[in-house]
Length: 249
Image (cartoon, rainbow, N blue to C red; front, side, top):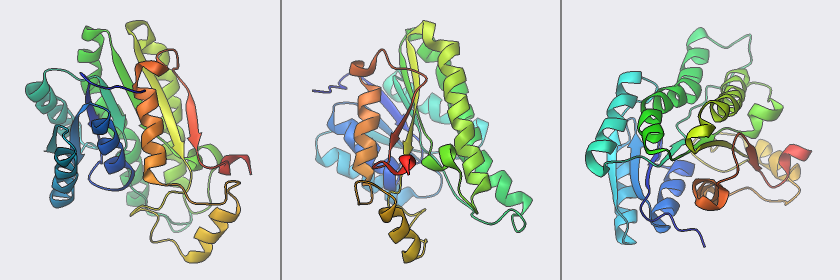
């Protein structure tokens, strides 16, 4: 049984999709949760209400974590409200899919800043209180695209591969302070980012997944909960693919 009672968790980009599922599951398991969004106040409030309805405790903090000052404010508001940070889930992400010959500089910059720089920003701001407490769980949401690549997603693949290197380096830096750092690589999970894909792409993903189905946001959320728990206290610097076997194909 995973029990996260007494823990405070920040989940970036948690107003919808995988991030929202992570926030709700962590709250179900006893954590106090900070729901973060950039410009989705109504959706974020809906997640907070869901957590409240199940007896959990959560706050909503608007912050564009791709900007360091906003990430600092997110951490400060968390500490001001709850007095501690135990779990940081770097989930904020975006896509701007184009073949490299058509990809604008802005398409590259926005995706790298949102998916990779945001993790640096949040860790940079959160790691000091974690080190002072000598406890922490940092979980970065990468992607199987960061492991295998994907045509038309050079920016997204680079950002997600960067998160893997970031995870491993950080795990080596702060492991002595009892802080674990791991990454989860989801396979194909229907979210706002993937719903724009044509049906043939969805069908191909299912065909290439040995379990023969798409993932659910909760599949990712429960993997996060495990890595955030004391049950995973001897796991760090690892990448867990939650993809129905897709990466094997």
